[in-house]
Amino acid sequence: MIQRAADVLFDVPDEAHEEIIALIGAVAADRETPVSDLSAAFGDWCWLVYTRRGDVIEVLDVGCAR
Image (tube, rainbow, N blue to C red; front, side, top):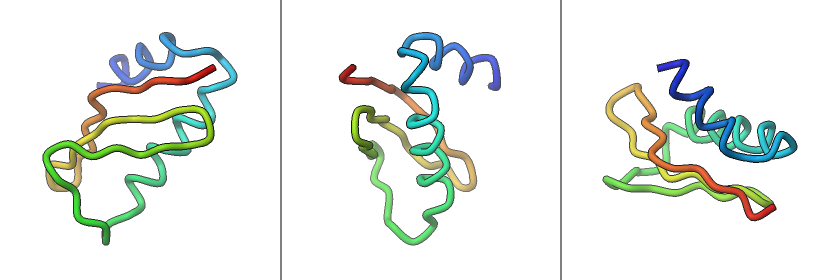
């Protein structure tokens, strides 16, 4: 699982890593917002598509507009 997460970060520019990690952290910390089968989180330049299965956040896609 850690390797898959690392592989995702290799697909985006280096300067986007912190923003994507911050988005994942925000999604993981937010236990109050209901999550549908597919949900999305957006930062200034990046986004991620995810789903939550219990305590596990599954990131399905990430992208960056830079």
